[in-house]
Amino acid sequence: MKSESSQNIEVDRELVLPGELLAEGKFKAGSGTYMENGKIFAAQLGIKSIRSNFVNVVPLAGQYIPKVGDQVIGMIIDIGPSNWLTEINSPYPAPLHITEAPWRVDFGDTARYLKVGDVILAKVLMVDEVKHIQVTMKERGLRKLQGGQIIEIPHSKVPRVIGRNGSMIQMIKEYTNCRIIVGQNGRIWLDGDANDIAIAAKAIRTIDREAQCLGLTERLKEFLESSKKNRRTG
Image (cartoon, rainbow, N blue to C red):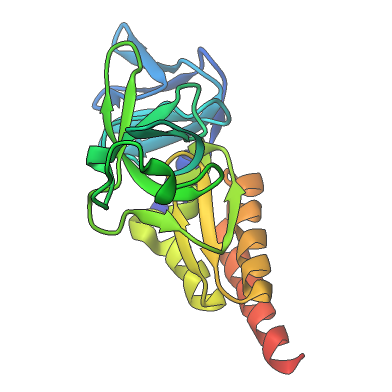
């Protein structure tokens, strides 16, 4: 007989099909689900997740749809006299206006601060009903990202990479000594020793590939411990 904690883990990693019955009774319909006659069904292919009595289905793939407050990693793709156009791995472009930059920028002087190809850490400031988006860099910690390496995963896998209360990403940081920033749009910035970056990137790719598998945290810890030991003895 499986323990209650084991059952909870399985529920959190269960692959479900559209129209599949997910729950009934005390539960509430969350994202990726719908309710019919008091029962909750999957509205899309994805991973079943239950949090605080809300049943959700996290899609396996799909484009990132920005939400206000999301931290994103963007790339500058165009420059105007009063803004920069940022690509945030979404169907919709995201302008960064000079009034939302962390510098005092004069009109027409935008190219002095950010150039096409630069990578920035920003936050989604506004999304209106027709998907006009604005991002900001004025909050603490938001900045231009220099050096390092960018990898991309499906945005739906971001919560698994972060882990419960940040446990997964913290474990990767501790074993690799890398600085890691995770964007809600599925972009991840890694900085550190080249070998450590390679190990961290491999760990993240493993999470992307095996997000729904049981025992992933334990296997990942073993991989990181083994990689760290090999670095010391190599």
